[in-house]
Length: 99
Ligand SMILES: [Zn+2]
Image (cartoon, rainbow, N blue to C red; front, top):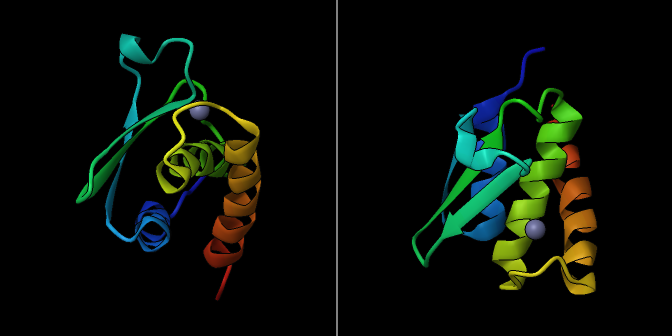
């Protein structure tokens, strides 16, 4: 399956208004996680677990989940986070499939 990573990176960067790097990894530290995020005021690093994220849908789902932590500032998987996650998923899909 071909994923347009550059496009995802650009969409993500617009959403969080800072540079986003997407790293696909199979490191053992990712065990038990689909994705993790590290961020500060300047940049956002998203780590996707390559063992789990194997389709475009899963990649977008995991990316949106992590970006939702960034935009809400909520580190918990709260209801507020879930709401933002759902709307980011739609937004990313829409932008991704735009011609
Ligand atoms: Zn989370």
